[in-house]
Image 1 (cartoon, chains in turn orange, cyan):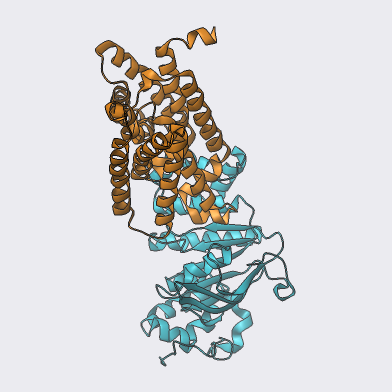
Image 2 (cartoon, rainbow over the protein chains, first blue to last red; image 1 turned 120 degrees about the vertical axis):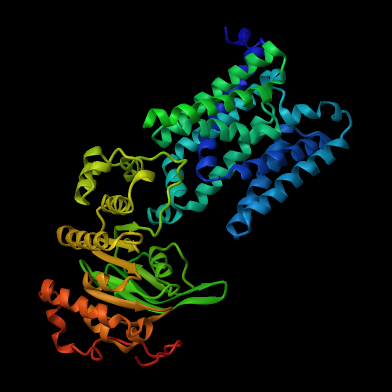
Length: 267
Length: 275
């Protein structure tokens, strides 16, 4: 049954969205808690440069985006540790990476026409191979976050507290940086470089209003992300809208509902 | 930093030997030697920027030493309460969940810890919704769950009002009595803290003087740092002290004027005016 089902492009698209949500939910929660939203943007925008480099050198696109996203994430994390003004630094890096990526991609023959696939995703064109990459990468990130969960949470609360408990906060930061790079490489096919940060932040932010523990916030973020993926695909089919932005729009609607209903529930 | 026990440490829980800390070439802690013995309450006082928090962080192994060493008794368990812990509003976290970070504790254990610090009712409340005093007590409960030999508290009463502060120090004293743990804490509010301490270390980049509260409060080094304005409050402190804690300082009756046993450090680069 499984393989025949995967012949349907809509099923593959739905599974791609659910797979991404599996990693983006818990990682997005950390992005929100640690105020790393712009950090996510910088890493995601750098992925466009990775696409250009991969196409120019005939390497797999996944490898290119992963490498450049990782380089960007490590650069940002290093600058942050050295006390650079992060708001400005990230603003410079995020937009420079995007600009250089767009310039570089214009040199690659034949890509100019489907540039929007990299910027906004092309979830309806997800192949079985893509699906394997998405679930492989997202599964890896989800396992990594579950494994490090308690340490990550303690380091997020307070790095001194983590240190005094025998943890190494620097290592936990690195775990998040790695996870972010993998999610970016995975998500570029689904929602595109411009909207990756949205898939991290919006489901997690929507989950905040509905939950009372960090674990439930991460789990509900996964549910919201998956629901938004299905909803966005439905909207895309029904109204012929671009799939990636439709998914993010659905997540935003859930966020608005939770912002209105959440406080009512807990008061 | 070495965590191995060594001859110099003896019975002490934790000891610093000629420890120095530098930030970007500037020495912020100079030649610090101190030790904490079992079941004593030691308070580090000093003006803002005197390196109090840095000293605690160096003892905890968070801040690396530029010179000297810190040694701990083998197997020493430390409970740490950091300065100013801010829990982001976006992070949902009940007090009960907070107590199980990073290691899980049984619900009975967390409930007992909250009851011990006097806030049994906050278990299911969000950390972000607690008052300053409740928050500090939950932090203390978390530190107690590790069954520490040594509690290290960094300005634990910051943001509390005076009655809250006094109650918090009474709690620390009771915990020391019940569990036998030693307490090393930092403060910049002098008088309540001094009344609650067995020993006071006066810090200003280096150890200016140390000894029992009465001895330190009479030391010229201490007077030079905190000025004559402390006189009135000190009188108040002595008054309370003589009523409540007569037994605590029987060992320093011979040193009422302080110069005998407060130990001013030689080679003090900052110099001291005479008060």
